[in-house]
Length: 452
Image 1: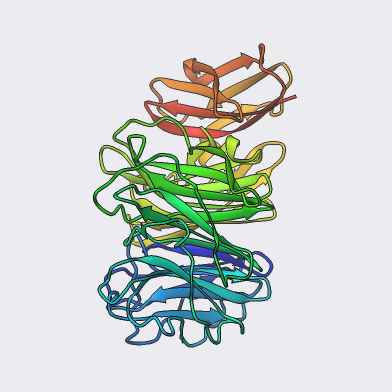
Image 2: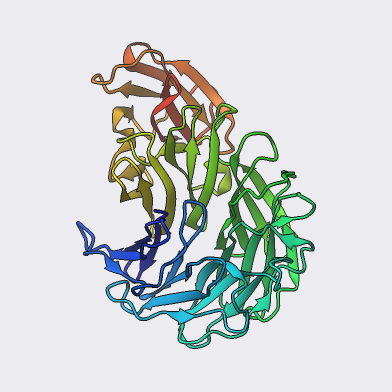
């Protein structure tokens, strides 16, 4: 249940997961090339971690220093701990308690690692009546051996935090950011707090979310973060504009002004719901994963990617797993050197699945389980015309092609008679476009097309 993925030195994936019934440990496995090493139990006997589909243990790495943070069961009456691997997930050390001085009134730890290998833990803290929830941050000065007193991190935004919504945290040395969902008289918007002194104080705050979601109950879902230079990218779920959708925001950390802000992915029926988005990337390369449930109750893990900043995420999504459909959820994502790494929960056979996708500057995205193998696009790049062919082995009824520009605007749409379509560039300008081939709402293939 609820796998998390991070990258150790050499871009080696390490995946962590739990069982979810309250009495199962946390496990971790390191990739060794064609397969994963035998999973290692990373929590001691009789130390049961809280983990569920909507919240639980988190993981982060810097070099070969890999950290997992979790809240011990009983979740409302225990402490927060970290476990560390100093060799990239091959072996794991004993637990270290984080919550010094805050007693039992804590929930929802999140973790990041500063350059040099010092972990940073965000945690929700309550008063002795389990009221007045806020987020605090505790830094370790010695590589996770001990943790200092926690500093308030969510007071600047005003009002309590949403007391059953996890947070996101990210650290770049002296600059640390915590993002969380507030509860301002049932306004459930996403805020961030910024520290520029290594987590000692968090005097700066900004609202990341303009969807104005009013909800009298707790939605039990929080944000995830990515820093690219001076830009903070945040992703989260909101139902403020109707159906439950995944959103992305780009915030300038120098001015705290929001720039790009949009729903991720394409247009879906109102009764389709999304949740738990996660983000990874570097510079203009961004990837976001989320889980999506249709009106029949089927749940899939989706992935949207862009090499042109957040605008390229719009209408450029694919299903992570093309087999065992309707049973994948809780995806997580990592990225390095042109390659995305994924882990997600497969309920069809109660396993954790791993997958990669490599960006190719000529043809777009190459996947280790090729979602787009049912569709061929050639030549790509093209200057005058391009041909789209659907695998003749597929039984299609009314396939159609849709082209989008990098801002997500639909620029071309056509049916594909006899599973083959040749289109001319017409008045489309040179640049990057994204295609999607559908048949009765099912995505047969998607990717990038370049017009020279």
